[in-house]
Image (cartoon, rainbow, N blue to C red; front, side, top):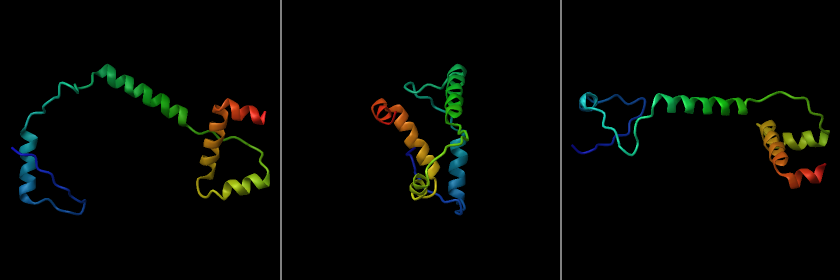
Length: 104
């Protein structure tokens, strides 16, 4: 059987032929690929731990930071999301020893 590709929108109702195709496909066995075996429970648990660790690293914390009015105006001129932009700027400077040394 040849592979058929359809693009459907959420508003579009399935035709009877398409419904029958889905029913037929559901009866077919799942064929695994030797190059991409199914993940074991241990592998899935490992991925879950990595995901949770990354989520914890991304959690934002509120801090009080004293800035000059000029700096605040410049930051706000960046538009919506300026605090996230400032966060990335500070992080990139702290990760670059040469730039960091310039301001110490």
